[in-house]
Length: 277
Picture 1: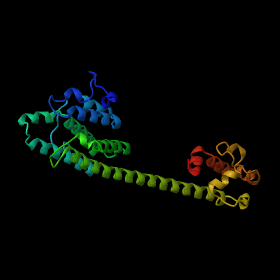
Picture 2: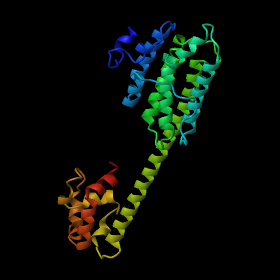
Picture 3: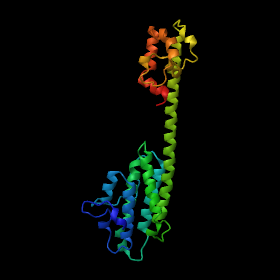
Picture 4: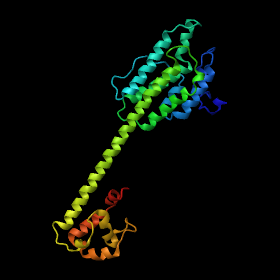
């Protein structure tokens, strides 16, 4: 039974079930399906509370936000508002009384949940990838249950959710692109930091000193100098000590400049920077 795994509200009933209008054909199945999908994808407690709220009320068909950061989320919100306006305007064979059901039926409650999510995140500068993925997954699963939501209207519930899903997919691409750009910027900053520190160490060893021991080293890079550091500096560098190089550089590390460089090369943050961890 699909309703067996549903999260219950305070009175022990699923989110939508106690608010299904009597005589609304197919509502029980629609409510059960939407409850299951919401519990599967939504983790935001505020949205879950909104879904099960006893004093649920339908919002207007305006955007409801003064400014936005993400055009695709706003376009998705406009799509849902257009669906609600079109649905309200259409006559029904059962007469005008059916209009009251559109304030509290499962489709309306689901639309309002998605609108609430869109209004919250459209104005958010940094939208998390997981948040967008979860909403995209929810819309995709609703589309997989299209048979539960039959309609003869050109702008049907399923057609509307399909448009919303497309916009959210585009938003996800933008979020992923932004995350990759940030990762690339961080990696470049680390690369420049490694170069700066490496050049500074090489200059300090060769420029203001007359150390002869460095002539025996094949490289002045930090990862190469690690092999020559004295044993007391090898705590964070297991397996890197080279006894021959340590003997060669022993006198250099005992100088004032050498001791500073040895301490710098074995400093935990420097080890993490050059080891890439």
